[in-house]
Length: 175
Image: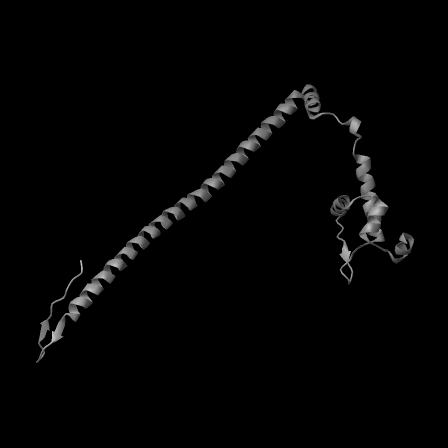
């Protein structure tokens, strides 16, 4: 079946996994390294061209050849000590450069954060002021509504008599 697909020069992801003997994650990683984007057919199924799979296989072989065997790996502490013994001046220079870089980066990040927080302080102060103004205005509305009610009652207590004269009638106040 794979030979038939090779003649068509397109392969499904399952066939690519079989050919490369790799899982989906490794195939995705290989595609990223090779800058290959799988295409989709009219039905929405993913496929690879035969040439793309050949490139993926080459990259897979390069990766396997460049990775040292597990037994040859040296712990980080041992390799750092070996480097220090080999050239202490270079190591000190690299460490001081890294420390300077860390200091500059930290100060730059702190400055940006401070600028953002400073703007936030202004916003918070403005929000508090607006809330206070809002509460004051609400209380003023309540007071004015009370005054309007009292004035309407006062106005309704006057009844027209004659010739443009008005007489105030007794108003009972509930207290």
